[in-house]
Length: 375
Image 1 (cartoon, helix red, strand yellow):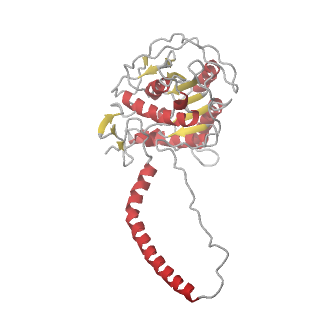
Image 2 (cartoon, one colour):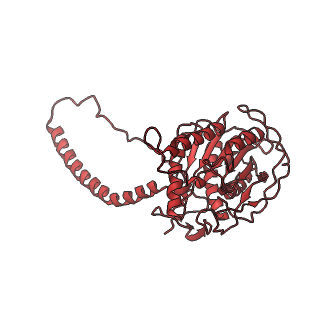
């Protein structure tokens, strides 16, 4: 059964938090009984103490009894799992003429997330989003699409201040029990870890902030197990970098019991967030994940506080981006090309911690999506 969401943009509690809440409700009755019992005992003790004071001629103690302060804890993100503490704050003084430069890139799920997050961020007037999606691409398959090379090309060109990298779903086949390395562990893990590390090092440097969006829960159990094994490696690598954060799409989109669900309850109404293939997101799913990402970025970059009323930036889709039609049950073997890019109206300004950005010579204003998210 799908879980309720208070609003389309409200972050969803993680499974751990949901279990904690159920446990808290179960224990609440015991705590009430215990407090009542303690109150009775304390009252009796106070009565005895008062009687003793009436018969005690000694001087009262000048030292007050020690007090104990209950530690305060700060709850983790309710929408996602972020494995590191923010190390760098975003540039302040964002304006419509000098917006935050946001790059959203990755596999075909980045298409729906790029639209969902891009529209929401651009509506503040102080974020200029550019997104790029490549169907069937992954970390483990640079021969199909070379993301390290692409990052090396686009980061100098766009000079992004915040990067949302959507990757891991297509790496579900990377985890293999054999061959083994010299330590007796599956060899895929060390290789994959090095590939992820190279991307994190390239994306989260020079003052840039990286949010790595991992794979969502997949309908096929075998694919989901492989994708989550890859995600575990990504989490470990990301956790070692202060400016990189892992965002758990699996926990955001699974059912109350941790299983796959195509729908999410929003204000008591079921919303279809997954496409028919059990892999991709619907436009509504892209909006949901995009809203969760926006909340995380807003916490670090104060986007709402700096928003410009009645101003809106252009959402730019990179030339060559590909996607899969909504409801497709194929494995995305035939990518659908997007509209060719055009030159955006203005070039992004540079930041002090990175080389000056060159004017993007390609990238179109985003049009109303007619296709669904792609893997």
